[in-house]
Length: 150
Image (cartoon, rainbow, N blue to C red; front, side):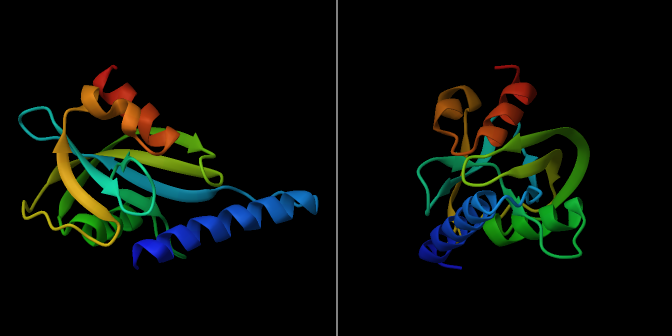
């Protein structure tokens, strides 16, 4: 998906929530999963988003019939070309940045190390303390603060 399509998808989902709220219909939040992946230098793997200002953890919205870990593995592969081993659950976070989401954030370890950028953004290792205020989504920001005790 091209950056314009990512923007359109986010806009369409926001519109859907606004419209249903005006009609008095409560939709449940979308399910998503993300990963905290660190290197030996204590840096965090982040995606500098092409469709929105700021960084995000690798991950995203689940597709129909996916588990949280299946969706996470798919999203990480799509966004970074990396294979990871999903570890323990860090926590469950909610956000309403564009539309309501419930995000399960896991710790993960690299299995492969060949990072490739995607249409979603540029993948890089960043020092958490230097980018915490540049994180695009509130749920990602809270998870990073919890993990690194910022």
